[in-house]
Length: 269
Image (tube, rainbow, N blue to C red):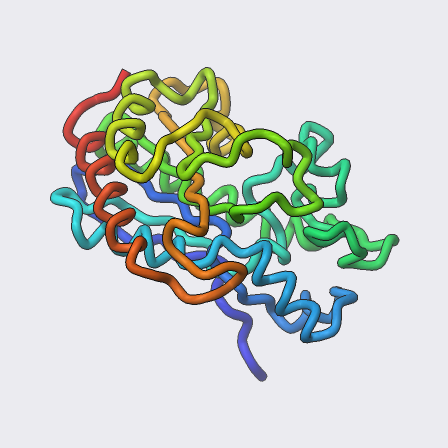
């Protein structure tokens, strides 16, 4: 019997690093049992994965880790977001439910049916979403216990041109979008990110995607947890959609390493 692939990887960094690089959308892996519940044929599924996957962001985080003076910890989703999306709220708080892309997607990036209309999301949430969320929360708790704080840097990418599923597809699409939370994103961390990514053509706040990931047990309650989302426009480092990485990946990895080091060395406020 073929065993199911792991759901995530926690990759240790320096004991004294408060930084956790979170990479939730880089994988294309879908377990066979989950694939059986997806309506798309193989060719259509590959096209959907090209559009929805934040390709090469795991490699970007690995490059930043290689370059950084103080190695960050990494939490990498080993499964596609078409299994579950760990960054969505699992309930009615999630605005993307309006287009069938809550924690369990029912529709594609082009608003076509992805799963049967009567799909029950609960088994997928229990099997994949809940353990993932708990594991990230545990990793954050570990950084707080070791260093007194946790700095979660949420690593994403997004397409150069808006896809039909986007609720805010008409807003600016800067080279680097910085997603923030008014409780968990200190001004100092945001200033550091603006500085290290300044040479890539500019940054913007919460456009076209807003917010940043915080484990639900800490969400809006624990000031020891800082978080910032980095959304890199894909034309900076890869061929779209779903193509190979280019030379920009190394430069972006170096910039991310600078942010990691600055956040590691100085308590941001």
